[in-house]
Amino acid sequence: IAPIRKESMISEAIHRLLFAFGKRSRTLMRKDFLCQIRDERNVHQILILVSLIVIYLFSIAALPLNWVGYEAQLKYIVSFLNLGVILIIVASLCSRLVYPAIVSEGPFLWIMKTTPVTPKRYIWTKFLFYCVPLFLTGQLFAILSSLIIGIETASIILQSATTALLSFSLLAMAVSFGASDMKRLRGDSPEVQVRTESVSYMLASISLIFFTMALEIAPVFLYFLKESDQSVFTRKAWTVIGGIMFLLFIVNLLVAFFSLRTGIKKIEKFDL
Image (cartoon, rainbow, N blue to C red; front, top):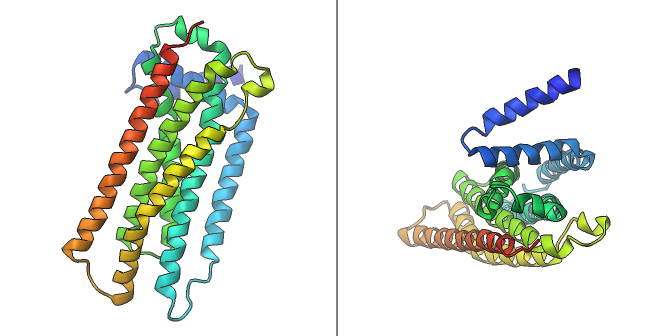
């Protein structure tokens, strides 16, 4: 009786948490949540993730950044590399958790096609379900590591915003690649059906991350000059930083939009 009562309490808590969504989306999210917590492999992965976060933050704190005469250079070089590592971690989480969770539903695609859940609602529900935990994980990495490194507040906000933008676009890409591979893997063996990564997705993710890091060079360099010279930003410097962030926003918005649209189109074309 106790396990049944505990499960009902969890289900009711999930239902209240998702009251802002439609009934069909809430049902789909509740199913995904229960599948995640009942899978022992996911519990192990979460424990590993928490351990990696702790080890990573301790590693950042142990870096010798107090060299006399090179404090500012070391801080912003490390912060720049740290941003790249965080983005790769976010992409890896999408590849390891989001992509296989969607691909594994390929054999049961006929259930979704015969229910009132439309492809658009299905894709958006998957995106929103993984959006919050992935966003919070990325922000945890970005903010805590930046505080440990000791860069100024404005630079922390810049890296946090960049991580948030990439979290949304990388997640949308993972959902799209997962939806695209559903039908192709539907008839494969169970071992192939639960594949945990997509080479195409990782290549696309790395390309987007490299593009982002290339743009981030200018703001990081400007903040380094500002701190080393003890000066203030001119209007031109703020224009450069604002223009780069606006470009990143547009690029990631387009990537997320077209990725989700592609995923919807792929499921709409599936024939059972």
